[in-house]
Amino acid sequence: MWTHTTSLTTTYTIMVELSPNANLNDVGMYNAGAGGAPPLYLLLPGAFPADAFATATFMSGNVLAVRRFDQNAILVSTQNYPGVDPTAFAFYVQGPNGTFYTQDARDPGGNAQALSYRGTGGNAGTWWVCFEDSSVAGGSDQDFDDSVILCESVNPTPALTTTWGSSRPASARPRRAAP
Image (cartoon, rainbow, N blue to C red; front, side, top):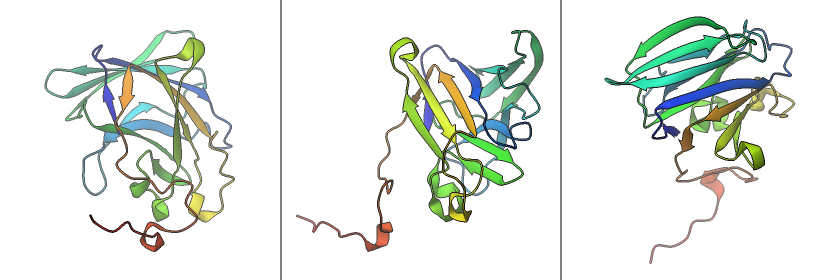
């Protein structure tokens, strides 16, 4: 899950798409606290060029104002989405192989389909969100370079638990006795 920073304006740029489905994969946001299948808010359609970008501004009343730009920074389209929670949102990628989320529990088998990295050096203060656009549970190459998004003016919320890197399912791991 993510939250906006004090600037209220966030920028999302698709930096790399190495998937054969690059021109078909849509990238967007959803309310991370929503149960079931959450409404999806499109940021960048797959048909946009790889160096296109979008800005999203959280307006009063939980309205997300999205502006999409082409590779020359020319405004191409705008769209407003009501009901977006600026304090608990997450990202998705949707294409021919399915819809995958930054929240592992929403993905097939609870497997990670996205990894996030803190920007360093000239990208300090940014985050990279790297998606795998084929089911990790179904034989993907697990290279996490199918959609790489640079996010500015957002902060992650800390994970309460993780199973990343574990060779056993959470139910089979030893538990610490209560004090």
